[in-house]
Image 1 (tube, rainbow, N blue to C red):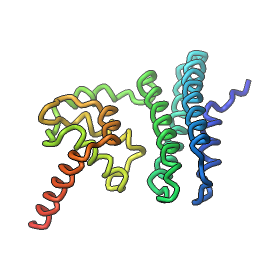
Image 2: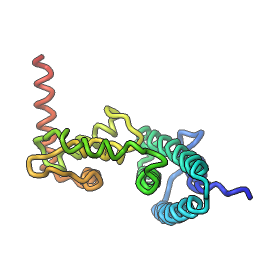
Image 3: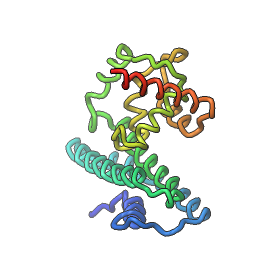
Length: 217
């Protein structure tokens, strides 16, 4: 029996709204909220279908092929959405929340496969985790201030990654602050969007210090 493509709806949303055009029609608040609601609902359905399909397969080889095919497809869609978000014209910022929601949803689905079916996708991951605790760099900023810098580096394309979530998940385990040894990558990412003015001022001041330091070389 031919199995349906689990990611069909998400793939269609991305290709219909963002492929082959640089101009997007205005999006009302109601339309945006409805699309985001459907994305969250579809994400839950995809999780359930993925698990059901995997548990219905009896061959280890076929499970590996199935998971890697879907993981690769998620990566491709994720890179597309991330690229669209970074190049979105200022006049179309109403689409930003939709792109961010799509990016987070795709990232969570990849994370689900990584964590639940780790041996099929990334068998070497546990070794890396064990090494991280002895490789931390202490950043003399608060968690919120460091988060601002990472967000700015991602959105200015100083750092190029498949998503902002991936930036935080990759870098945060190696960071510590003067008051915190173990940082939460998800908490840092959220705080990057809720910055207080005093944190912005401190980050700007520290970046200016860096500029002066570079000029002195």
